[in-house]
Image (cartoon, rainbow, N blue to C red; front, side, top):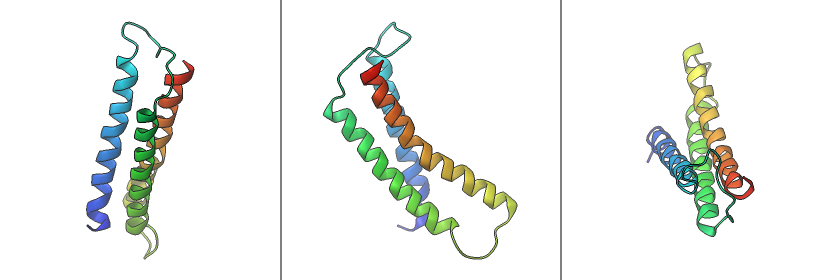
Length: 104
């Protein structure tokens, strides 16, 4: 698999996993505006660890596509920056949701 193929696949996988974490957080607190206080289970921690691993893979694919080489056009720089934000932010959001399950 090339970096050009891996990046969208890993970004999609990260997005689906983040949506799953958010859905679990929502379902554990029916009828409440906040997530109830729950112990952080090993499954939740495993999901976040896998999401971080996917983010590392996506970051590697991003670096392979956008780092080095010749000067890039402004549009390509904006696209690369937006993708970098997505790759970096999703694991932090998952971690925040994980902590929200514990500390809410």
